[in-house]
Length: 528
Image 1 (cartoon, helix red, strand yellow):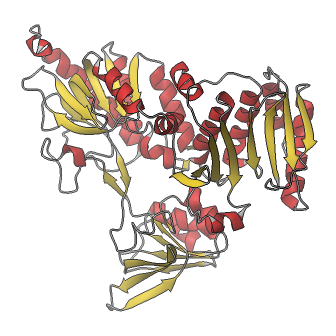
Image 2 (spheres, one colour; image 1 turned 90 degrees about the vertical axis):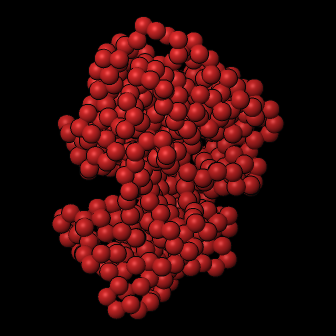
Image 3 (cartoon, one colour; image 1 turned 180 degrees about the horizontal axis):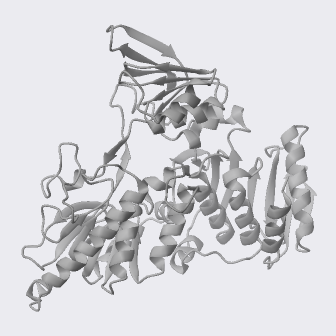
């Protein structure tokens, strides 16, 4: 199961085990069970602190295995084989159940340890989902830190009957005590905040006590991270408030156009960006959604940003880098069947549609790439493009046209997502050349029609374009002195990671120049 290099690395990790652990496996006669057996038999000899036995219980999923700390109630369970994106989850589970300390902050650890109640979590994941490991690893850690929390991570592609019964059509999909609890990427802090009542109030109180920043960055994507780094390097007090550090990059699979990095994946890049920001004296405030901008009343004064939890942050200069989100079609049925057949992440949710018929909406690079990836999993893909021809790169179009289970429809306007019994069963589209209406029977619709800027909270306070983008000049200045903007939320063309990083750096340098030119000795406004 493991090649020599990975086996050597895993062996080195297993030397860090501090307490004995037991692997308890449940098999059946399937090929996957044999693969799991081979994996666990390779792991067992890697440390004298690891033992392996077979689980004779009748009520456990097969193939599955538990990792238990010997002599305690601490443990986690995987239903399936945690390879692919989940291999890191397996390694961390082995280490943490074995007593190796987590890198989570002491504050969050104490929050988890103090949670009261009984929590039985089940998470459905797919091995190709780049967002799933965050959720799996967070819940695994929580079950290690608090004996009242238990977690089973389930490969949805391996337990299709269960997925159908529970109507799981998007991953990660989390159930708590048998009831649907959450879908999509969630950080450890987000999960704990949902379980810890009153955490918002406590966080708001802490934020309200912070001194004004010289530079406050709103948004934690590539533009926001670059802004924070460049500002902090100038030696000025810098804060960064983000609803989700990493932004859309966290939902991106393969990244091949970041100069000097031939290939990486979104979650890896997000982790690297966050670690880079932490190298500097930057106050990172994650899970903070901005709701209102109150500009300074004079040059050099304090701008205020009010947050969703009721707290406020103040700063002499602001850099707005709130990024963008997936654009929705806005047709009947789209919202009704969201996560019930309507999806926006083919890498995450594609395996749940194995052998089924799906559609991809959009003929740009993202749409064509999604169709190519899905064609290797599903039974049939229909790509629908609104324009008279696809806009994707030629090399991608050639690859798509070579696939036998793909149909391409151009000049097609999707008019409705149809469904039955709570899930998608097809879509209607209009042939824009003839005006004829058509219906396609299918089980999934993947929407890939671009992005919309996260700027609704700024309407009426700052100049926006007709598309909702923040209007900036070549120095990243907005219509408000002392307020700068960068990245996908702005009018700068070409929404690319490398461009966002460059624009974020420019915005920070412009903010620093503004602070120098508008330094004030009169702190009367601060006192007010």
